[in-house]
Length: 244
Ligand SMILES: Nc1ncnc2c1ncn2[C@@H]1O[C@H](COP(=O)(O)OP(=O)(O)OP(=O)(O)O)[C@@H](O)[C@H]1O
Image (cartoon, rainbow, N blue to C red):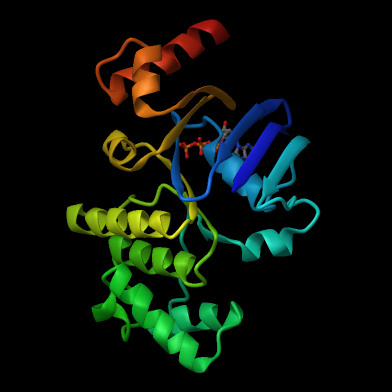
């Protein structure tokens, strides 16, 4: 469970996060939607304690990342906006390394790597060095790493970038199965179809502020739109007009 209240973060004069508040519950998928520069990545980084906030409260399973970043990070699987693999390692070595870091012994590591490889359909990649992996292959290995330790919370920054239709479907299936197991999933994306198919709750951001939140139906009703894309465009346009 992730709870954010009145979160603020500025870079010099630029207010990247402006009184942001929302909740992402367990056993649910919360999708964060926003135009470029809305503050989505800044928000995710602040939640992990990777970036200090100026003010406001953040709790992940009741723990403040500013007070105990270690505990919070141990409870979160994170897919960052830039995924980096260790090029000299095979995908199996890479995943095993993180499993061991997460406290698994050798047999547990072997079993869990096999499970996530199946979940993200990367069995055929396991024995290849990650150097030269395609964007989609890198992404699937990174998603497998993010879920390795069965985190109670999963934070994904644009998880479908670079994925083809089949891989996107594999990801969708994996996320729904993680949701069913009670995981709190928070993801940022630009892809409306993904939000429409996955979200239990949507948080729309623009210019560092939450401008709307609710179910897809609630957002469409609030903005008098027939589909999510129109709702999003209407909400952002209204916020931009108010800002101007
Ligand atoms: N380290 C930083 N230093 C200065 N400005 C930053 C920094 N990180 C983010 N910003 C600025 O904060 C604002 C929010 O950026 P952020 O990356 O959080 O947006 P985003 O919603 O993730 O955008 P996108 O969809 O383009 O990835 C932008 O104006 C960005 O230029």
